[in-house]
Length: 345
Image: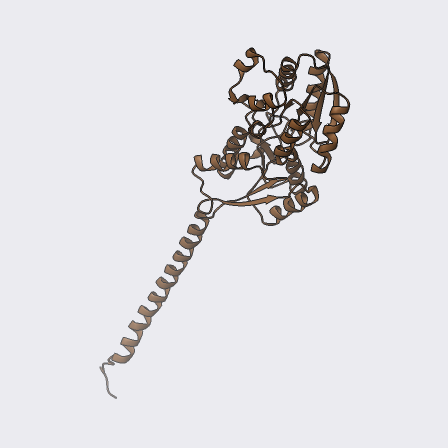
């Protein structure tokens, strides 16, 4: 028997074992590195996710739409860089408006900005979960959009033109300019539920000073000429236009009809006076659209619409077009002229 024999390790096996250990360690650390990189990539993608905002409107209104975009820029949002806008204009079609509302929901936008009363109605019918911001509507509580101004309570919030004094002031100004007027025509779009509040307040103001009213309901541009003919037939001394997207899209035509019929008009938006309407008194609508961007900002940062109180207007303006006054044979009293914020001569 041979005793005390030493068994030396096989060098090849030792090397193989060492490399095996190194290989396993390398694979382990490589896997960790890959997983870490994937986590970083996922976090980076999440951090750079660009919010998508839908902008739903019955008819395009360049002045107010640009005011909203200006509000976004003031808050640091740049389209295509840190915010993506999806604009949908239905061209006056309520049916198409409903389709576009559903389309925005299907796109899974983060917020829908419903830029008219009809748009608000279409958006809320399409979703009860996606936040909806409205830049303007007359009475969101009466329209059934929210529970209260202080606590909206659902997925809608924004701004309102609600102000009990505006309609009365408009009627009073028309009476001062046309002192012999005994009947006032009111042009409204009955498909706009928000116009009901303005009509109610106008009726109250007219009754207070003894004016009769002729309500002229217009649902399409084709009905405008007929409305002016009726106003003249019923001897309306002036025409008060309740704000609506339809009338905004037809402002030049309405101004022309007013001049042809020599009808003094209190327009629905300040921009109407630029195009030839006689006067405007009311809310500064571009300011509301600019302020709507702050609601978008707050919601994108985590706020819930139900917790954001609906805000009232803070800026009002009174404009007079003296060119139009001369063309239709109306003399603006000096004291009324002195109250104007801007006079177009």
